[in-house]
Image (cartoon, rainbow over all chains, first blue to last red; front, side, top):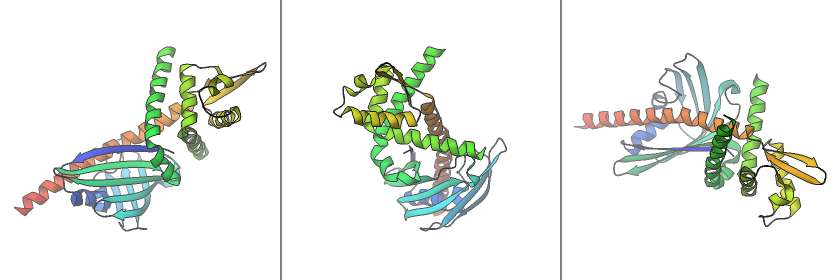
Length: 148
Length: 121
């Protein structure tokens, strides 16, 4: 059980955001840790379709990640599997879920990365995990303060 | 190096699995307030039997989150923060990665929206 959720409020229509999230042209514009170039972007946005992405970071290292479109409900929701090539950065396989909600001003986007094999537990325990993480961070901060 | 990464992933899995359970999180929270508690002290606030608490401690010890030491008839349980540091570091790393990506996604989608509206006029 590992999950991370991030949200963004975007001033663009749901369909515009959905295309940015699911097409190769769109993905090439934003996926990666920094503004370094995307060297290759392929996507076949239908259930069972694959995507692949290779980028170079501003530090000059190259990384490739790929996965499968597991669920698509245009223009509201997409679920992807995701892994690094060769598994060097992180050998686990993740599940990425992006949901889009139309608002009067545009679109609210919610992004969740969890471990693929226990999606159910990550859903039911998201609250508990977030709470315990805050506590653990407080604990570690205290521990570090004591040591220094 | 690959085996280091696989070990790292397995350790993370164990840490997160250990942290899923609310009783185990409560045990850690108790140790956070009072490190070096005995098993019976730890079991006191929970409506479960001692053997069930022992099982939870086994899971926490396997994940390296606690250590147990025996002195006479008393087992003392201590918190071990290193696996939590790794778990938090994992979350922070991905948070940075995706925060930066989603900021660029937001900027890109807003640019596309503006372009579409300009063309539409």
